[in-house]
Length: 287
Image (tube, rainbow, N blue to C red; front, top):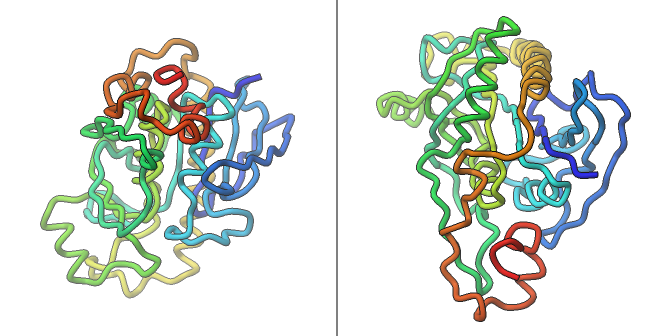
């Protein structure tokens, strides 16, 4: 049985309390091991697979995440939709701690992360002008409103390398550019999900203001952890509502056919080994 919906939990969100009929599935991919086992089950009557982005016990730094394995694993399970959640810092006064932002753009400040399934004899260039699925993002926003969250639609997520946080100069620069929130994880997930023709959106969970804010130095670890825990409870409600309301079946968003005009390499020039490795992703285009 295929599992149409994937959930990625970030800092503070390590489980889905409502998930029933749980079964752990271990997947090995051509790109190595994912962050951990996929926890499958039913959420509001829908089959889902949950993955803790940073592994059990939060063992993996953002730079250490095997993004390719994580997304490939979802693809092999039959996932068409991924709803993710991640902790972020706010770059604007109006995005307060405990608020949620559904971003619609990225700005890349990572270095050297692998962000594609392609290469090794197969070249593809997918469109990434609009990096989040508009249909899934709209649904997540409506679900957040329904559960009473303080939610903002749209905005740019700066994805930085980490694991250190920004310098004051960097934080002020991002604000001068009009950026909205800053985190360390979602960009590569979104890129790989697009290549895998999976709809992707994220809940950016604001834990605190970034270091530009005059009150930043008063923020304690205890305050951030408390915000993480409260954000996680809100995110679970939003994700469960999104899953419940999601229309499964045929998709009419661009995500569903992202590879249709993206593969450049002549089919007879693609190495057989690459065709085998990427079969779950490219099978309908390259036999």
